[in-house]
Image (cartoon, helix red, strand yellow):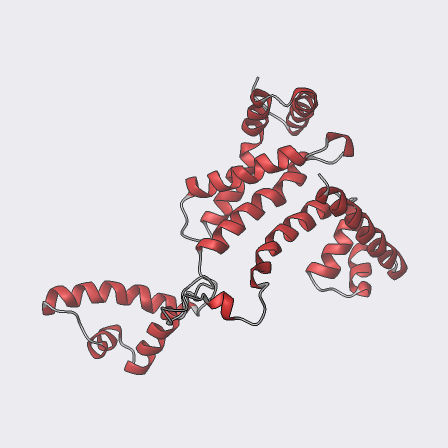
Length: 258
């Protein structure tokens, strides 16, 4: 039977998760995936509009986050699966985009000039029957030679060197990472995992407590500003912060031992 309302969707999820908790059958898990694939499609569509990645690729990556959320979801805790799953789906997509994309952002004008230059280079190559020089490209772009060279340099430095890259010393064959004073350079890989845990824990909090933490820590509001926005006292905000942090610590510790 097709799901036509939020209530039907929630009921169907509860029934499937109850069944999955009993037998862990792949058939049941696949039904849960089908029921909640809309969450992944919505998130993938959002990121497709933010970048040039293929929708199907992001859908596949987001589905991995959905599967992970399914395995970690506990129906008895009483929170909605959609709220629980979204940080996992978004985290997988962001992790994919971070690894595939560029780490250094450059101004929009540089991006526009570089894209325009790619077309101009092709046109000049056909017209001149050779590779155009920087003076010719800059003139065709309508910018100074210096500005065009800055655009080229920005794009050249957009992709950082890998820490696994070999140094110039062929005999030593050391990597850049090994040449760094801190041998624990790879620790940045844990950041996305921590973000997913925090987002998952945050989504499980009671609504007012969650809003307090979001206003104070994500939107950088003061406790007074948060209190005014929520219509509560500053003391209430302070108590909610302590309660929320304590609850999230407990959730994260439980998650680490799963």
